[in-house]
Length: 174
Figure 1 (cartoon, rainbow, N blue to C red):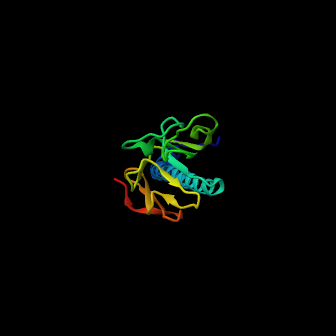
Figure 2 (cartoon, rainbow, N blue to C red):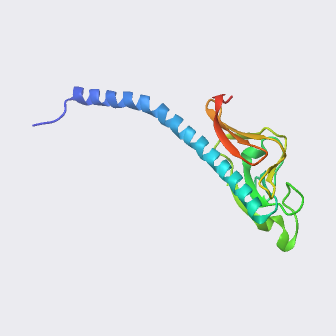
């Protein structure tokens, strides 16, 4: 009769347990960095769509924080709640207007809160826009930082000309 002895089974279980102890923290770190990368790619995608739509339509396209996907939200931490991209036909940074030309009819994209990550802008603005020539508003470089405590985040830089670059933060987020 062939089979395993109790000692062989225990040794196998100990080896499996040791491998699990080594692998689980790496897997958790991998999934966290995957979420950071996914959120970064989503933000960059929204920026690229906003810029290209502003040039294509010949009018400003705005990105603002939003909790409901239809209006802009202001205040501390607003950018970490979600965002919308819309054609901004009237008052810059506000979903306004009535009837067929209302900004709410021209919401191009919505995004939900970023996977437990925090999102912050280097500017105090509650929105950012692209002009019809592809340049960014507010004027000057803008930095968007995506972070999760204890992990390296991502910094997205938007130049005045509308160029978008992404780099890893130089140190872990706190």
